[in-house]
Amino acid sequence: MVRGISLAYGVYLLLPIALLVLGSFGNSWTNSLLPSGLTGQWYRDLWIDPSFRKAFTTSLIVALSACAINTVISIPLAYSLYHGAGRRGSVAAKIVSAMPVAVPTITLGFGYIIVFNTETTPWLGTLPLLVAAHAVHTLPYLTNTLLSDLRHLDLGRLERAAATLGASTWQQFGGIVIPNLRQSLFSGLVMVAAISVGEFGLSNLLTSFQNRTYPVVLLQAFYGATGFACAATVILLLLASASALISSTVVKKS
Amino acid sequence: MSLILDRVSYHYPGTKQGLEEVSINVQTGELVAVIGPSGSGKSTLLKLVSGLTTGHSGSIVLDGDDLSNKPVHHRNIGMVFQNYALFPHLNVENNIAYGLKLRNVPAPERLAQARDLLALVGLADYGARPISKLSGGQQQRVALARALAINPKALLLDEPLAALDAGIRGHLRDQIRAIQRRFNATTLLVTHDQEEALSIADRVAVLKDGKLLQLDTPARIYEEPATRAVAEFVGLSTILPVVVAGKDLIDAGCGRLHAPTGGRRIGSQAFALMRPEHFRPDPGPDAVNRIMGKVGARRYLGSVSRYDFHVEGLPKTLLGESKVPAVEAVAISPEHIRLLDD
Image 1 (spheres, each protein chain N blue to C red):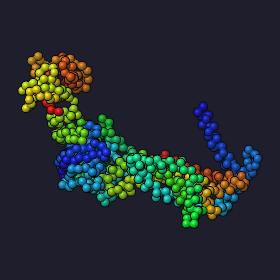
Image 2 (spheres, each protein chain N blue to C red):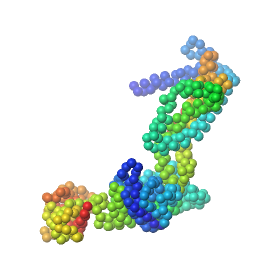
Image 3 (cartoon, one colour):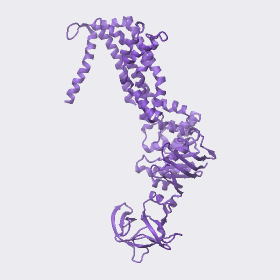
């Protein structure tokens, strides 16, 4: 019974993906259950399409920038949330954890449109604003990952031990906290990159024509040939799966 | 390098828990064990000395230096934590060498020292291993070596054996004592295990509700406890409320017993402390302090049996211990009854 449900769920989950892959190699696919003919044409088209290549680069730049910004902000943030014992600290930690669920990207996007579309702040459509939005959107994910690792490892006890051995606060942070957070930082960053690369709602609202991200351009593909759209989606899927795989391998190791 | 605590008081913010005017002096190379029930303040005491908790009144002086305003990382006090707190990202020898690295000792030198210490704690071949591959007892020894590596002015041991199996605890206890003696380390050990305290320490401090009840040698703590609370906490005993009936004579409710009453007035109330091993089972009819009754629950402990002995007129049963349990009478020599005032 359980196995049957699992199997049905697996099919439900994997069938669309299988069809996408199939479609990306199909010559034509209109009004039929399965595509007909075999071709690598769609991937070739994708490769030479300048707008897709540009969007791919933009997505990578945005994702890597979000990772860099989050690293700088998240480590001290998670660290201070961990040590901000007492009620105020834990309330702050709960808000950070709940933020991705409580604040939909569309809300965040509209906020940005209102704030950054004035004469004094005319940054709507610029790459830095897009990066900032992605950083804000993904920050809680990384912070949560780090925070749970800080708690799990009970790093406070290691810091106390280091202090008795002569480590100043900075030496404890650099020599004990950071090295012990390496793995969760890495897996958290892969997650940030995966979310950023696949993010559509926020990017669609904030990008200009010049700096569209991959998912935004991908939407355009659906108005053209089905095979082309499938191939473009498969590329995004590969990117996201690779991130997820790296992330889960790291988590398993630690 | 003596450690002198003089009237140290501390209260946790918003509570009455903490320490009240505790004075303890630990001489160079001496091991003082601090025992007490949970909440007695023994861990607080250790945290104050280490500097992990601050804000006490009174003074803590180590080797002539007042530690009050010295941050924890400048105190040069080695500490072994109950959960060892070894660094999981470093291997065994780098854990031990960590304190030396902070003191800018060159790598070859500090690793050589770490290996020497490892050999000393019996883990010579374990230097390159990750911490996660060590057993609890091995981790405990690495933690001890790490604390000793910085050549500390004092050594603090916070329940160092509490997380270990009973089987290896005794062996490690002896090893800790031997290493502590070898380094002549001025040591403060906190434990809730009174047997551990009595067997390892030069002197024992008994804390209760933040107050120091007694600081004395293990033998005197056991045989001549200052208060009823000390007697109850250290070792097994029967403590009976009694009235002084005459010179060296007390009334316990089951007849009169001979016991040294000191300068107590006739009619004054006191508590009589009797240790189980001092009850002689079924003595002859002429024995002093012969008490008739009948035996209750018996527990076979191997070398001896421990038994309850019910006596009519007494508010509680007597606890006896001997090779063969008593059947109908016990006796206790007067010098083995110790009167306590509270």
